Length: 300
Image (cartoon, rainbow, N blue to C red; front, side):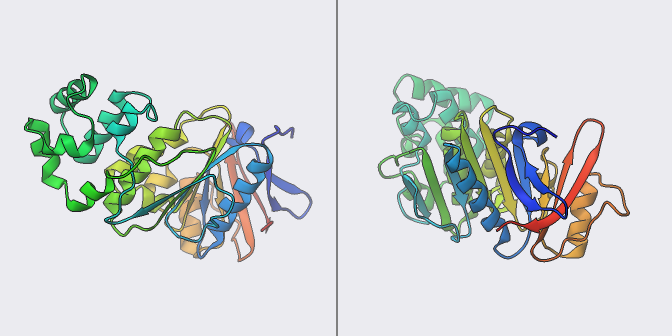
């Protein structure tokens, strides 16, 4: 098999090295495992793509990802300012346009279409310049926003807009509010969603997808795009991650979980369902005609 310049060695097989190639296998790689192995794989892949002069964006809910070498570290903590106000960021040109910013607010606070259009008009014509201002206005959309708007939200949107360099670590490990995690994830995803020549790592991807905002961010980062690679690393086999198209790297986990992963990938029962032991992996990938399972030892 011929590989592209983006191919990365992922496993050492009995007879040959096993590669993940986003051009050939699909640009979203799902990684399932327990303990710290998913984080180690994301770090390994990120380092390999750095060598290929790719930008790096890591969303880390574990706190285990090394913090050295990043141009920008965005630290998310409950009750602390982040500067991640989508309306303000649209005004500054960091988010593409005001409508994208308003749809983020719509997703977070579940505005209906008419209220979203009203907020968009107010943002477009300069009446509203931040999310806190929208929440404190006299308009009807403010009533809906305030139904779930808390002091944590108020603090979250305060502060100066962070720098979004070529390599970014979003450290979510000190944020205990899953709502705050989902908000941060969606807003940063909206900033980087059109970047090319970039590796995006989500760890833990399942945790990031637990809220409506988090679920809305996943498609932004897994949409196939030339020059982009996304790795979804998780310790949880949730349906929202299992059903995303793309190859799968199975690391050591419980046997019944391994069986569920094989089942979701359409691997037939029998010899193709290799039991993965500690220090090993199974790489599952498909073509329109076939399904393939390659096994080997981890390279980390």
